[in-house]
Image (cartoon, rainbow, N blue to C red; front, side, top):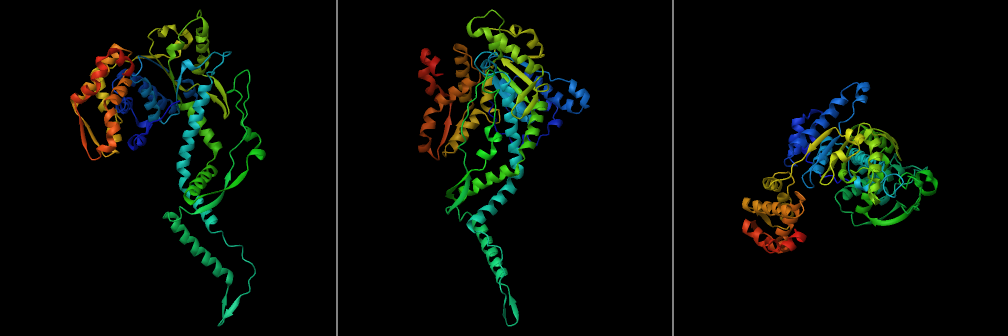
Length: 472
């Protein structure tokens, strides 16, 4: 499943329908080095989605997404391009390995689970958006509830005999209400200033210890997705228990409760399913691992079966999920594979035809490695500099040091397994190992990492070729 990286405010403000393919490529350039052909392909695919939404419903229904097949070794940016594209488009995005699926009849995950997972991601994304909309209202409601606990409201006014003093009628209930109101406002001020955070209060907390059911069927567990709590709300839904906690903890809990009350989950589900159907993106990695025809033995025998199961999902079908039926006709599929052993033509012809756009990604050069270390918004150098800055250490890399790191990474990739830019993580960790360990004792220091320091940290490992195969 995909892990989303935070985007900048600048990216969030970009309106998708205003982005031209050239501007989409420029946005991707901020995070991924090189691979112009792949960026152009995904930029056109994304722009075509925007174009499709401006057509009449009848014609828009006929235009299917042009799925993309990326071919190239690991660690060169295939996944990152797809992930950044989804972030840019604010689309539900799922990364899944094709090799984890099995043909129907075998034990394992069925291919329809990718659509169910995508729906779950979309629902969580929409729910988070709704939470932001209701957060202020939820906080006010939670504050009122907490004040009710700290200062229970006065009982309803009883018939009270009015007294007279010098001919003026004094209403006892009105005076009590005014006094209570003043006290409540004082408590509200103290609550907002954090002066009551350590006070203990007792609140009603919903019990979460629902019984667990495991249902097996011929279709597998995923097919029998039954929510027992929804079926039997009277048995499991309303049980609460008293619990003591500090005011600040109680406030957070009450905010969460109020947020859940204010969000209409039916509307969230409708919006999420619509997003999945019209703008969902599935990144199908390791598709070369299932590129095989009949005639295999053992586990390989199901390869073609998995392809045939994936075919209707990519082609366009309706999948049953716990939230209702979901159509896959307009979901964009981006498949990727190294294709070292197999080749794209080893896929069954029907599946090949569903990926009309083929892009071959280039292996990374030493110059690319240097750029990867410095140019992206969240480059490795920026990450390590920020991490050590939290310890009060100012870290600086000389250009020669970065070239040396890139040279080592490139050389190890050539001599052992080529894992692309991921090798830089391994090298950088080894180079900064001592510094990261000693950082708390170096507070206030300005550390410059030069080429000699890099060579010193890697010298012993590089000399021992067998050791470098394991460590680097």
